[in-house]
Length: 86
View 1 (cartoon, rainbow, N blue to C red):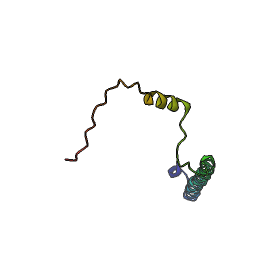
View 2: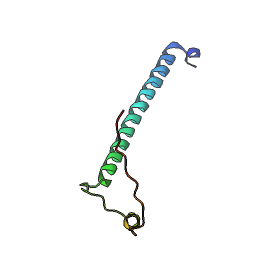
View 3: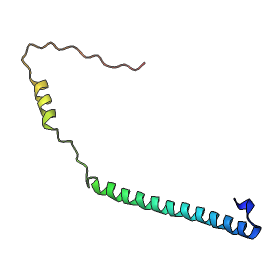
């Protein structure tokens, strides 16, 4: 399109198009950086302040643990073999 215009008008059009392109990319960068910072603040606010030294088992885990620890005395125990690295 710029080729069909007179030289001064074409130069002004190309300069305006280049400026608009650079400004749009720059603004997009700043907006995406701001969104990332907001996401970082939200993510950090949702993390616990301190970690637990042990994990509290859920009631489902406790039921599985209780059933696995029940011994009737009739179970056969298989000997475990030690792992030997090749």
